[in-house]
Length: 219
Image (tube, rainbow, N blue to C red):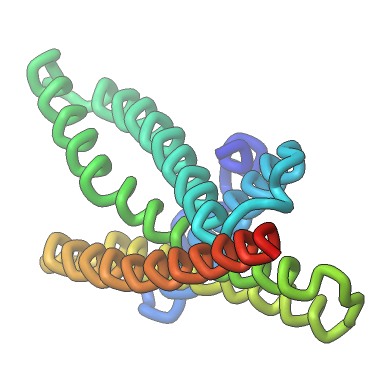
């Protein structure tokens, strides 16, 4: 979350609370910015690994998911620190109330925020795995069309993850929203079901690559 320190006002809530304004704020200023940060971190770590070119598609999803989980843990720590300082400035605050409030927030963000970030990582990783598959399948072919397709998959990965992330945050920012818990639960369930299909497809793709590699070694 380095950009929070570099640009402290970038993710400040908009003055207007119209649905369109909040939607753009959640998708662009929160979702897109955070998912782009995860993508940069993922590519940076991948670049440092010499074995990256030999990764199976399911490994791409796993690394992307773990990048998102690491981001979520760092974000949770930042939220707890900021929340603690806000509570300490409140009147009639004591240690018991402070501990209870921080514990409640920790549990809530562990159940929802970490899982939501994990789903975002799987969604992005799915499209990054598809781009990686193109690189494997057409390793000996230098084609602009293949390059365009790879870029398209990367943009889709960041875009779809940002959309899911933005919808999650939109539920939090809607004023007088008394259905936050239910929408969160529905959003998480949908994300987990979607993730299951994505992971299953990449497992099949990985198995096919392994089988082809074995056949080549036998021949």
